[in-house]
Image: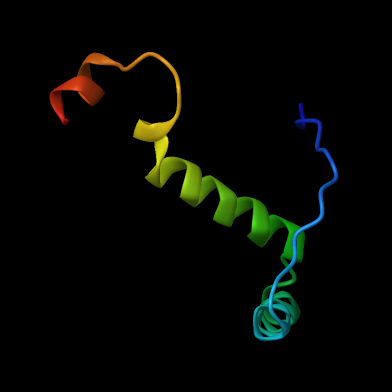
Length: 62
């Protein structure tokens, strides 16, 4: 089952826009999908700064 998506506005540079368009043309992956993947990467990188309960593995790695 697909997740429900919400609409938001993101401002990017002209260079980012052009590179995303080129990547889209080459891969046929929608630009929105690349943006979602980028958000997932940032959330993963900073997951220790997000509220929530740590797992035992997370606590051992701190």
